[in-house]
Image 1 (cartoon, protein in one colour):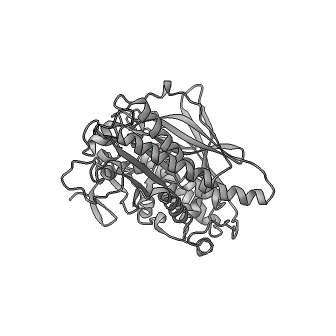
Image 2 (cartoon, rainbow, N blue to C red):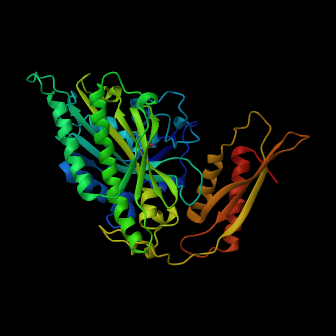
Image 3 (cartoon, helix red, strand yellow):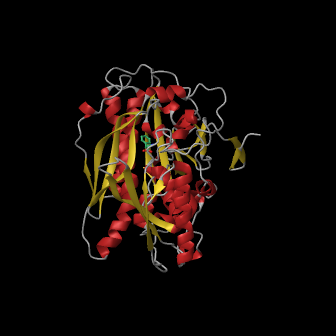
Length: 451
Ligand code: PHE
């Protein structure tokens, strides 16, 4: 019979070439940290939802989407070209050739746009709603390096908002109804932003010349819609960071909150931007966004030329790490009550480290196989082996040496694995055993020659 994977109660056939989900990652897919009311990720998620819905209650909230989606939902419906690197097996966890662990919450845009009443012409949306916008929070999955800020699972919040174009004639000298509506919505938002936040300094000086708009929207629509998008995100950034900044000011530092808008590219929005916040001496990337491409709306069952809208995708983990002062992203996943007992629904509090357990370093060095028939090893494949064999007992993995032998032309790599548990002391025997398992797997799977 065919081999199968059971994920969130559903059975999926595996695929000999595509399936690349390890047991470690599989076991994380049931955790739903964003739903835990007293977990930093859950606390932050709720705070942002409440803030965005405080202006006009326009957003329908979806927090229960399962992590397995189709290739169609994650990539095709959003216009990803067939050779986009995000689709590769070294970056994405595939269940089989048609299903994968979503790499972003945008995978649910098509469905959620399709739920908005009066916009879609779909026969029977699963969950019709009157609200002209939505917020989706969920765990997302990417194969990646191992260090204090990278984990194969993290969390995003997707937001989107649409306005219907009015075709109705209006008295001369007045603007179409949807333009009036947009102006009204924008003004409401600006008033709220003004009331709540006096400290935000916004840098926004990129020209639209290299960030082209779509033909189906007028200049005025682009201008109003993108202002509404930017002010909405600034509102949530101000809300999230201002309080933190205030408590830091009280402790002696005196800085303004600075954000900047930079140009970006996403296959399903145009124009597109990213917002960055200046935090502890660095520009930190927070959120990608843009005006939704018409094709995405058509894919959701909308009529051409009938509406305009925006979307954003916000990463929650980095923000939660800095708000709650959590030094290592693995802590979010610990089962240790010394972590969880520190956090309370609705409260942003500073994490107090309970103990720092010593780390131990082990290097693994190997020659890459010269045999062309051997499957080439990608750095993320090595990371995946370490995750599989060591779970959360590794703090980081770094390439420390790389050279090509001048005579034989053979390539050698050396990676340094930093073993360190968040919860307890590790024994040497235990680490040696894991290290041995990692080495063996590298040989078995990728034919390397250990040095
Ligand atoms: N999904 C994008 C990411 O993961 C963010 C995004 C969402 C960008 C919506 C534009 C619109 O980076």
